[in-house]
Length: 119
Image (cartoon, rainbow, N blue to C red; front, side):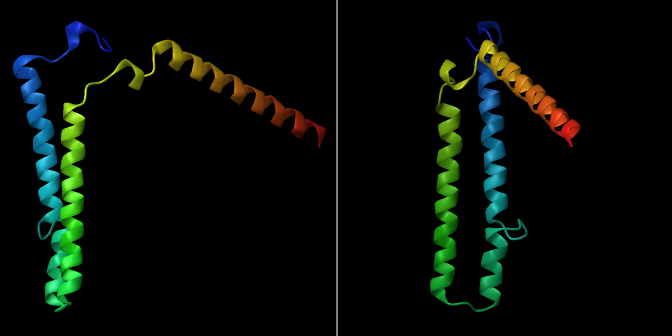
């Protein structure tokens, strides 16, 4: 109902879009944890090279697992959650907000001009 029933992805199109979203998540998750990815993988490798204590290494691994679990939950939750009308502003609400913003900008501009003229 947001885009119109004729534009909603169904069947294999929906499956393909979910597949793309999952592939992007998987690539990002792997990049976060692989050596050379610039984050946890490099951090863990540097800790091993520095002969850091086991407790620090364990904390890094725990943080990595926690963030990866949250990241997976968030992505799959977003895929499974329906888009509701209340989560998307209507065109009328959007137009009203733009009109109010434009009116307040005009007021501020006029006030600034009148303040400038007084000095």
